[in-house]
Amino acid sequence: FMANADSYTVDGGNNSVLIIGREYGDEKMLGIFNFSGEDQKVYLHEENDEYVNMLKKETITCTKKLFVKGNDFFWLKRA
Image (cartoon, rainbow, N blue to C red; front, top):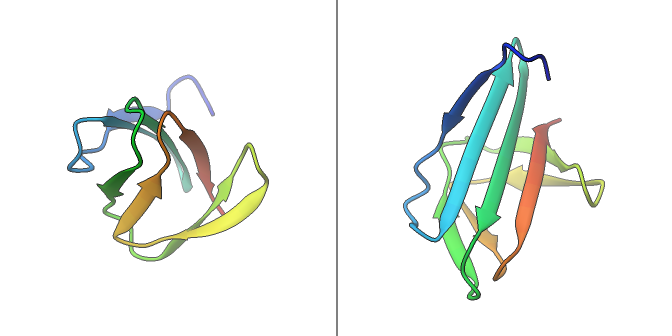
């Protein structure tokens, strides 16, 4: 991403999970970090957008909610 890409946090409705968004033009990336040792659920404001998990090279469809395992994280890029 460009240094001048917009950066923001996303309210996922869960204080244990930090969600950071970056956007530049039509590119979008989400960093989702679960700081709890327990599995957590977050609510996203995405409407069935497809994202690529940049670490595992798998495509996932973001619905209204996403489950994140304890102490896990995702780096997602819009497909």
